[in-house]
Length: 175
Image 1 (cartoon, rainbow, N blue to C red):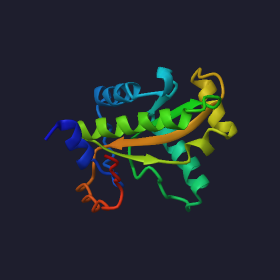
Image 2: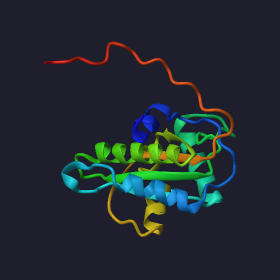
Image 3: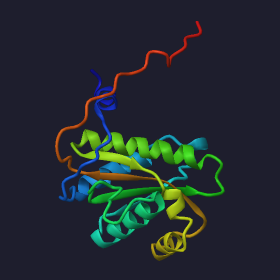
Image 4: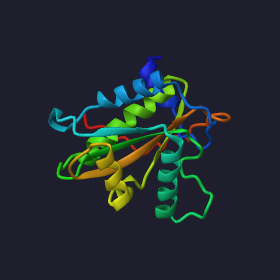
């Protein structure tokens, strides 16, 4: 089977990660795959913020936890040591589509490199806060950005979950 199609069928969302940080070269390759995602009008509007600093990662996790309404101590990133945050310009009408394609490419790339990943939401809410806007400003990222998602990445702790059976009523042919 074609390797890309195989990765698409085998990739799963991971909800338990080992604490070991993936190699920087692997994270760079994952981000590069995201940068090559299709984008509306070829604008390449979406950007990635790679968070490998444990203190910042934990602070973002706690902000995400609070937005999600979970109790103290819950980690919405399931222990993943690296968080790749995808954002897109607020004024770009295709921001969510462009960012979603970037997220998909990054999750497939992570799988192809033997790493696990999961898309975690609430990035939009995070970057609407003063803390989120300050983080971007501190990184030199100017303008108004909308968080699209977090690609939590790391080594899988355990086995990948099995694929759910695909529903049969999702394809309609017009010939």
